[in-house]
Image (cartoon, rainbow, N blue to C red; front, side, top):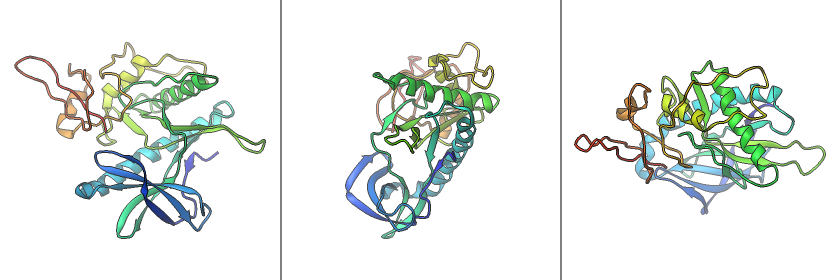
Length: 276
């Protein structure tokens, strides 16, 4: 199973401006409907930057595709050995200019939920079969760390588990908007570097899905550097030195929309980091 969930041959979309799916500090997300091609009449999600942040588009989209392509690479490997029904598809949309506005358009994911954050939090889901879904997502992140030689971790896993309704279908995960934490911090502002990696492993307990291709590596004695948060966190480049393991800074409080964590020199107390 190819892990890339794309727009196929559909190159146009009707934008439903009044049907807002979500809104962050930088972008609005609205529903759309594909016009023509293999996805004709299927639901789409259309992401666009708010006018005051349009200058971020090129850099953001380039980094977004970089993270997505890296995640798809590992998902293709995961799909070769994972238990049936635990395969992963990852949205990889395309940028289109519609009505003079740029949109990142990709297949719609309904019943959206989050499994992990990029700051190490693992969101527990309860009910029949639900815990196993979280375990599989945790194991996928662990697998990416192992397969990369400990250099990175695919995280911020979110989307849905699509359970097959008919005999000729396969159950699977459908994910979007992932993040990557790397030791060199080469995947943009949502890359929380070494501390993001350690924080995940401080919370992750290996489960039945781990170690299926041999003993998977993991950091020794990892520390949780971030407060629990289900949001996606960002840190500005000027503050990135605080993500090195040699730096003692811990991020203690989550508040609002953007990450700008500072240390109060007089009190020695640290401020908060923010989610978007």
